Image (cartoon, rainbow, N blue to C red; front, top):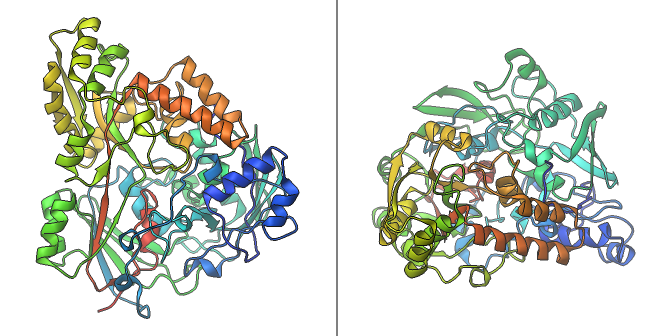
Length: 595
């Protein structure tokens, strides 16, 4: 099955300096152009001729050529990419304390990871901790414009900009040509070539469970190095999400010769990014050092980043309070309040994450093959209680897709079964399904992924006679169980990949690579396929509204609410930018230390 639920989005990135286009802008323009409606007036409104600008606006990105488009349509937000709203509070963007002053070269930043990545291969794994590190060490053809002034809820941070590609051309609706930056070197001193790019993109779309992002490139027919400095992507069909997926953190370019020699990159990091791997002691520490050959001038400022492997939250908090680490993500607002008493001068960014978490039901395991049982679990959930208990009131209700996809999300109270919690309905559904006395079940979990929410859910389930035992797992074992569908129930979380279909087709398509619990059905597949083919924005939104309603009714995943995230830094840390997972690594590119 191809990747479904996406819209046509021809777009070019190139060399003029006109204002950048966010995913939302590109989406709306893309629909008009793709449908052949108002193309000439639209292009004229964009500045005349046939050029639509897409400019990098961060400090370092401003040195890069801007993005242009030829005859094609826009990229992401109109295709269901993140449609972040402009920030309305100072807490949603780096504060003046973080960004003021003249950057200084040198120094070592101390940070942490909550776990060891399963391995280091940039084209196989999608785990968050690995992506954060690789975001400092690798580049893609494009990237999202995370940088100073572009906070996690800004449109700018959701805008694709040039990275290893100086520009791209949309020759026709099935052909994209990317023109590469010259003089780029990998960390081992070898030159980046078009062959490396073509090899990497083809490797990412390998049809094997190890390559977790293959689904995102299923509509790609071929990727070839057509000249020494250009790569051509041919599509099987118009594919709206292509630019989103190329800009996403997971689409990194690696050296072909290293993979040819070693077979994979599970034990090495050899990228083109601003930092390179100096040392790695598994379970203890990873050290990155500045790449003096990095192609963007001036950055990075830091000499090195020491990253402690620190799974225990109390140890993380103690390390931050004692200045053993410089940047920390508090578990909740209560912990943040405690931190401020110890270090009242810390600088804090609060923002809504773009993610989804909940309890996944394995539909190949009884009783979760019965929709009535799954619906009963949903009716026992009180999202407001989870917000109050786990998030200390900092959160909001959400279902089916992240609320961050503004303009595409069906409001919570307009979805089926929005009258939850309703214990009477839950008990009636269990009785109808033959489980009047409830049942016992185990829910696999890991501390960092929704375990606290699942613990509250376990208490709520008791009201309908369901005894859910929370099984705490080691992170690697948890990922293996999740990826292999080895669970009855599992508390999990997912970070964004760029397009709304990454939270629908990629999870619930019956053949999707991230369909952990055998979710979905033929009716949903048909809707997803319909959404993939629809070029009109409003019609596509209507299709996705139907998809969300089906997801809410089928209850393959018992959704948890959306929380708030906090990033705290000591005041001498400057230039750090909070970013949506998995783009977090980009937020370190401009960090410098004022001490």
